[in-house]
Image (cartoon, rainbow, N blue to C red; front, side):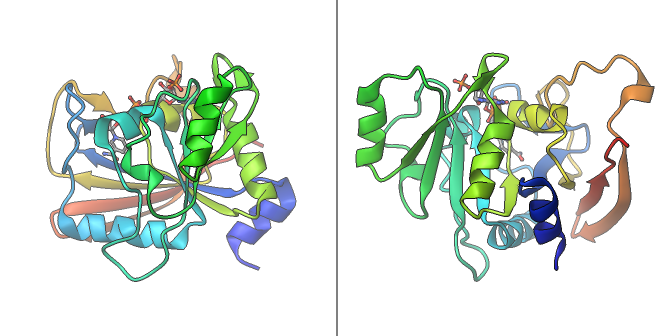
Length: 227
Ligand SMILES: NC(=O)c1ccc[n+]([C@@H]2O[C@H](COP(=O)([O-])OP(=O)(O)OC[C@H]3O[C@@H](n4cnc5c(N)ncnc54)[C@H](OP(=O)(O)O)[C@@H]3O)[C@@H](O)[C@H]2O)c1
């Protein structure tokens, strides 16, 4: 049994990898939201390998509206996984590129208007109406529903706020951070606020591996689970 199966069977949740493509100083985009491209082509090919190994890619509305990504596997052989997007008010436009290609799930709330749901269903998307937690879609509920659908390995690709939500709720199992030799100063941080005041409360990582990919580094580690 692989680690994805073990997590799924023991917790009813998918195994979650959080992927970041960041500068040395921890930014995933400039202060204007520009993020293309922080890492090298070789790193991006490796990023597509991670996509091909996942059952679904999950991102927030901010990423879709800033980057208009396809979220597909293009640089390596393999199937493009299901896409899951968090969009509380169904603000993502119907012409966004995520509506093409692999199946799309839009996670939203129970309060959104029926017309918007219908429009998205007509474009082929599934719409999940889920409970709210602190004004946003309850990410644990998204992952539970994903697991019920048989999605056992989820790759979270950002952005900053989604990464923070996932870490805050203890939902991330593994981090794969591509680190480029670039500095942006005050940009968009790889991980948004976690409200951590003391170093002793930092999220600890273990089983750290670092691999050089051209001039970039791929840092992988497990999130240490609290006992
Ligand atoms: N270099 C990289 O690896 C990388 C990867 C991805 C993105 N990016 C960059 O990151 C930026 C976008 O990041 P971002 O932080 O602004 O946006 P984000 O994390 O992609 O999306 C955040 C939005 O998702 C919605 N959301 C719903 N439920 C949520 C939940 N439980 N937790 C968090 N968000 C939830 C909220 O919008 P609603 O309330 O409207 O639903 C929230 O504002 C862009 O500039 C993009 O280029 C970089």
